[in-house]
Length: 249
Ligand SMILES: Nc1ncnc2c1ncn2[C@@H]1O[C@H](COP(=O)(O)OP(=O)(O)OP(=O)(O)O)[C@@H](O)[C@H]1O
Ligand SMILES: C=C(C)CCOP(=O)(O)O
Image (tube, rainbow, N blue to C red; front, top):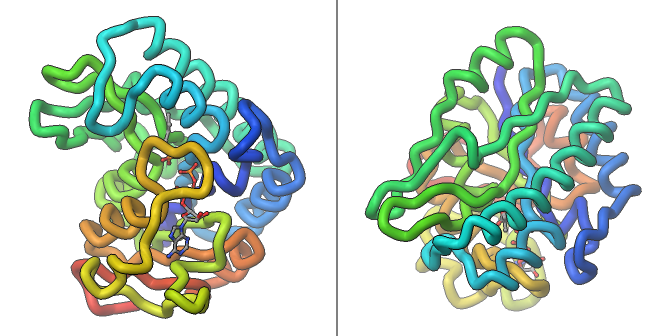
C-alpha cells in the first residue's frame, strides 16, 4: 500500500508571518507520519516560506521569471522549510530524505508539468520516505514558474501508483456556504460558488485551485485537518473526498 500525503503550508507554517514554522503542528504531523504502516511519500506546501518570496518576485504557476536571483530566493526558502520538515520527521523516527523538484522537473510550453518519479519509486523500495515540496521549476518560454505541492501530489500519485492520497490543510475539509464540510466533490461546477483562494498570501490559488487540481487525478483524494491525519493513515476517509476520475472510495 502506497500513500501520498501533502502537509499544507497553512498547517506547518504560520502563513501570515514570513519564514515562521509552526513547530507544534510540524511535530504532530511528523508523529502521525511515523505511525503509518504503509509506504509514504510526503509533500509539503510553501506556507510563509515559498509564497512570501514568490509574491515578492511576482511569480506564480503561470507568471514566470527570468531572474536567477528570484529563482534562488524562492527555492532557497523552500529548502529551508524542507530541511525543517525532514529533520522533524527524522526526529519522530521517519526515514525521511529530501527531494527537490527544481532539480528534477520542468514545465513545457503549455505549462504541463513533467516530474520524473523513478527516483521516488526506488527510494520507497529501499525503505525511505521521500519528502518533496512546492517549488520553482524551469518553464519553456517563461523562465521559471511555481509548482504547487498539490500539482506534485497529482504527478506523484500517478507516478508511484498510489493507493491513497490525502491533503492535510488548515480546514477540516472543503466547506459549503454554511461552513459545513462537504463530504464528496465529483465536479468543479458543483462547488465553484463556495470555493475561494487562501486567507493568506498564496500564489497558487488556495482551495479553488486545490480542488481543480485534484479532480485531474484518477485516485480519490481526501482533504482534512491535522487532527485527522492519524485517522487517515489508519485507513479512514476524514473531511472531503475529491473523486475526479474514479468512483471508488
Ligand atoms: N470553501 C472553502 N473551504 C475551505 N477552505 C477554503 C474555502 N474557500 C477558500 N478556502 C481557503 O483555502 C485555504 C486552504 O488553501 P491553502 O492553499 O492555503 O492550503 P494549504 O495547501 O494548506 O497551504 P499551502 O498552499 O501554503 O501549501 C483555507 O485555509 C481557506 O482559507
Ligand atoms: C510558493 C511556492 C514556492 C510553493 C507553493 O506550493 P503550495 O503551497 O503547495 O501551493
